[in-house]
Length: 398
Ligand SMILES: *Cc1c(COP(=O)(O)O)cnc(C)c1O
Image (cartoon, rainbow, N blue to C red; front, side, top):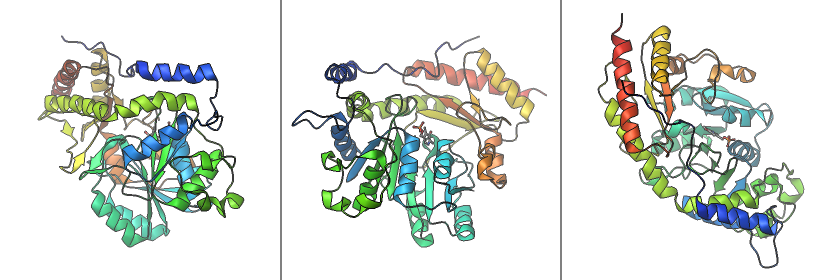
């Protein structure tokens, strides 16, 4: 019987070029983004310029985490305490957490079997709450029909904030993810597409929103040092009325990220090649439903999901155990208790979530697996063979 021995949480090492850049920052000691020598831009300012260019955005701000970027986006939009903010129910804890950090109320929208937001329910929730902001999480890299969503947001008067934690480098119909909304947020936490341990970005084309975000991130009135922010005039009025809620990135992390950003396209292609091998290996497995991807969706396959629709809980648990015994570590979104990185909307009790039967149905059978780039294509084929064989064994058992 074949067994897999790789680690699902082992990322690639930091590239040598990035290590050398980090050591150079430590040797000169100017780690704070505004601590620069005469004539020096600093790693963070240069990273922001390069990130804005890579994402096709006018402005970019590097921050302390993806979750900070999300909260900062809502503050820049001047979301008020107690205001309803819409978000998809299938997302990660930092998304409703960012909404709650302003004292605002997360209102969840149903999830379709393809793991994207249910647009009919979005309309209903927008009308019922009068919300003016949708924080759309492209959770696990699944992108909804963005033309339809953008049109709906316009109709409903919703400002769109995109959570691109899993879609940095992905595209919809040729347009980079993050370019459809007013603001996009990204994470550079270890399990995302760039790795600085912790970190994040916020991008926008709107000068006023970026000026607010820069002020919020803690610019100590040094915003003229930014290279991917609007000109000083944009700060004239704002600088008196925008609080400092410190969440800057430092030069050490930026130094690690700049060489990685140059390789992003290559890395995204490598992830998707792995995804396609697992997908091909699992196609037409009885009892196992693949998540069909839209033609327009040029996703980054950094993780893999499939559904075991209608399986009783005992069978799902047996499946997880048998796969684990063969070295394949799966996560399950249907478990009653929230576990590492798979908490569910009904476990965010502070948000007093109303039951969402459609989402419950999808999550009850939803299986999730990381695909780190330390896996080879052969590893992925082996993983698929194990997943397939065990599904057959458990599904057919009485
Ligand atoms: C990782 C992640 C974030 C941001 O997380 P941080 O750990 O704060 O960088 C936001 N949304 C989703 C869906 C994520 O997976």
